[in-house]
Structure formats: structure tokens, C-alpha cells
Image (tube, rainbow, N blue to C red; front, side, top):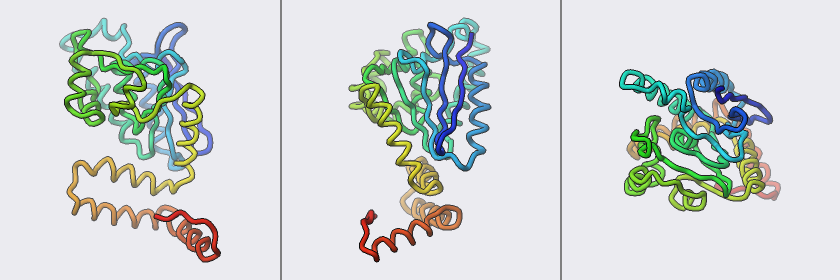
Length: 262
């Protein structure tokens, strides 16, 4: 049986949950990738969403990577389309216009860590464990792990993790930059909720524009960034609620109310 997923929506937040078969960890196969692709079609088309949260229904596993039944069929002919499909899926998650959060409990290994790293931020429970462990099976990272892990932790640390294939605890993951935060299961629930609420409370167009700016800033010069920020600022006024928020800010300031300074 394959892992399945479902999506729920509440207050501009979409939660995508992986549901593994009874007694097994969530894994990725062609069936689940198809479900993901259909869910991403729906999510991408919605302009009312502010945040997407990716999580597992299992407290022991976020995702254990590729399904073993798929791996049994891998050979020199089938491995290339398998890798390419995984890349397309991770790239689609990364390119969603709204912020994405990986809510990680338990193990995120191999392709499971690649799935988490395709999200913008990773919040983890104290029992979370992370590993880019493909070399233990004689493989390399297949779904962008070499690219995204290096950008999170730096080249030397990425080498240490993938050469050894070792599994790290949540505290070390945060210290290295693999994840952004860790805490107890209850604290994790609050942290994800607080983050999502903060994002929902901000200008939706502004947040989406900031995601685009931040994603592109490593590929642009400062001069190019100035032009991009100017165009994004216009869109915030034309398509977003910046004008209304600015009026409210100035009104509160003139009436002596509390204001948030830039």
C-alpha cells in the first residue's frame, strides 16, 4: 500500500498531511507523487492561501524517503526518470508562491529530508531526526538534496553529513542550519500555529513578493535587486493591501495609538 495524503484548509492556511499505511513510515512512490502533483495544482491556483504546512500523521516518521517497492525496480534505465520526477515535485513545492512550513516529527531521511528542505522553513520536534543517508545504500541524493543541503549548512558540513550518512538530532540540526527551530511536541504545535497566524496577519501579496525576492537574491546583483524591489513595491500597492495598511498605520500614529515602525 502507498502513503496517501490529504489537504485541509482553515483561515488561509492549507495543511498537507502524509498518511502512511498502518505500522509503516510515510514513503514516496509514483502514486503519492501523483497525489502531490494534484494537490499542488489546487494549491497553486488559490489566491486566498497565505501558508502551506506539510506534516505527517505519524509521530515517529516525517518521511523515510523512497518506497522500497520502487527501489526494487530501480535499474540504469528507470533511475533517471525516477530522479527527474522527484526533482520536478520538490521544485514545485519550493516554487509555491506562498510560504511553506515542514512540520517534522520523527525521522526525515533521504528523500524525506529532501522533501522537508523543499519547504521554506523547517520546525521540528525534539524527537526529530535528520539524515541525508543515501550513500549507505550506494546512491547519491536524488531529489535536490546536494543543492539544498549545501545552501542550508554550507559546503563543508554538507560533505560531512552526506559522506558519513549519519543521522542527527533536532538540536544539532538547528545548530547546523538544517532546521530553523526545535521543541517539544506541544511547543511545536504552538510554534507552527504562531508562525502561520503571523503570516496570515501580514499582507498576502507582500509576503508572496518577499518570497520571490528572497529566492532570487542569490542570483541577482544589488542593482538588479533594486529594480525588482521597486516593481514588487508597485504590485503591493496595485494588487495588495499596502495602501490600506499604510492609511491605517498613519491614522493610528496621528491619533497617538501604538504603531509598528519599519
